[in-house]
Length: 414
Image (tube, one colour):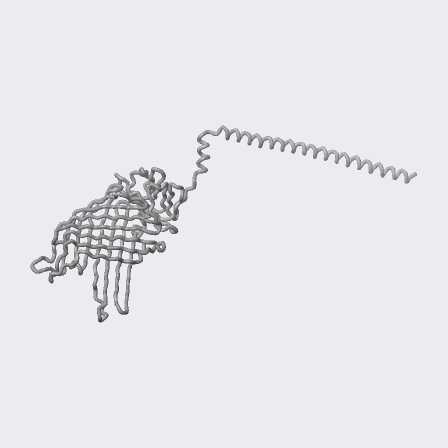
């Protein structure tokens, strides 16, 4: 009996614990279900809120004003380079060129690229230009202006310490890098031809040409030298000089308009003992005009009065050894690009004076330059010098009026 009561009491306690645990578990389950319901409701509200935001954004996009549309278009504009280490040029075709601006004169832009070398680009083919170095520009009716250069459309913008200045592109005459160093303003070309022959015939032929240009926005200085020396061996194999002539031409041109320039001074020095000329010097002033200037063809004419002084090596008895006289000087030069690797250069210079000074004299040089590498060209030149009335020497011998030469050499361009 006691055992039965004890078992009954234990079962009662177990039942009480089970009922208590069930109540607690039921409460927890109820709370969990409530939380799940609350979370689902919050998620639903969040999704509905996000959907509402998307719908509102779509509505705003449809109702977007014109100004906002312009901003969106601006974000998709074509790429423009930052000119930090190179100058940049964009052509009207959309192509971009990276390199260095050399100059712009008479609607022709000189631009040097590492891969494409020196290019002459027709100015009307340039759509956009930006320089990383300070550049100097010359605008009609204005003094030269220096600063960071940008050309876009029909506007020219110069930025410097004084602010920003804008000009019309149509009034731009010329431009060039202002250059932190003097060498940045120069372009140099040197040609050397050499022929050495030995054995049965000993002969030495030497020819050289040197051309240098210093360019600023308003002016251009040029210096040209051409020299020829030839020596031929006699029976004793002693070399005797048979040719020795040297010519220097130099001028300073200042641009007044896009095509018109004036020359405050030009100088020519010439020496040829075989023409009985110890020294001939002319100095004068002149005017010039650009007849045509494109990316492939350039043609200039110039002329003006000069003072001519000629000193002969020897003259006949009773004649003066030095003659001073006025002269008229005319000239023209043509440069054309026949192909991407072949150029033709033609220069003609005329001096007209009285007979004692030689009368009519001209210097003509026609040159073909074929590219070998970026800085080296193969050069063939035909030269014709003429003095219509050469002066007889003390023996009464008159030099031939015409001298012709064909020279072949290698040209280096800087």
